[in-house]
Image 1 (cartoon, one colour):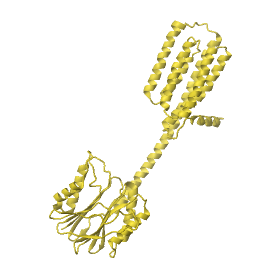
Image 2: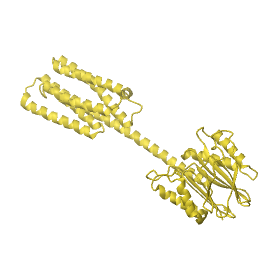
Image 3: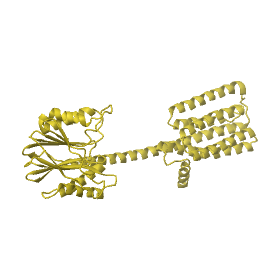
Length: 452
């Protein structure tokens, strides 16, 4: 029997439910629908009782009340939305309806205390989250109850010698309303406690999941840091320095130093489309493939083509990587490079002129079978080569102004005498000061090479 009652309550509580409802709204609907389902037959029963007692006016009031409850339930099941406004309208009708019925039937005793029906409105006004609505409903009920009390003492003047049937019905209605109120309060408290338990369990589960995600992200960030060079390379005749700053715990920017042979150093800079964990995983795959392709006898144009096909086959169609790779030869002071759609590196000459190392092919992964042209540039004594990702020039301050390439070039010219490490620090500090407290929206990578 208990299981059957529980199943019935759960079935009734789903009336008017909507999949998009937050838990608070679901709770309100459950309480409201269960109350209506109880109130409708109760009102109908009271109407039948008054018919048997030969009091048609009271019977019609209770039967109309039962019909209103049924109509409210139907509207709630159809409309499903705006439960708070719907509830407020119903509460107001209950308060004013119980007052009007009391006056029509000649006061408290002649109406058998029907004004106590308004207490249901007060109760459910407190259930709904709007305190203003609850105060309004309570104030309206208290005011109308006071008016009814004054009318009872002055206009209606119900004498103490009421028929036994009227007195019995008065106390029956009062007890019925009291029991109904207690039961609905008990149901509300039970539903509230159940909801709180569910929310607490969900909170604990979410907090545990969040802690696990934070732990995994911290581990992923450590692994990604291990992928990056731990120290700057030492190459005779050159000073080289690199830096990477992720906007999240892990990022999609990448740079690397790879000794090709005793005379050549490979330098790579990449930027995976997107940010976060997905970009970091694709970057890790790129690093593994890149390291497998680089050796003393490899051709950098063929290496770029192989990486392009690898990225195209192993990533989503919308994913791609901008990539720049160069080999620094200390015997000839030449830099041989390929640029797969990466932001063009800059060569600042000692005479102040600027050379831009533009793209020599599509971004990695955009089209299968793409070919890349290898080009060569020579560094003179004092010349500076700067490789960077678009997170630096695209950085924006609080006024949404862009850092821009012109500011980067001006800073390079002003700090070229500081050496590679000094210039890198100057650019990094200036970019950080520029954006201020604005959160970074992209990863930043910078590599500076200067021939000494």
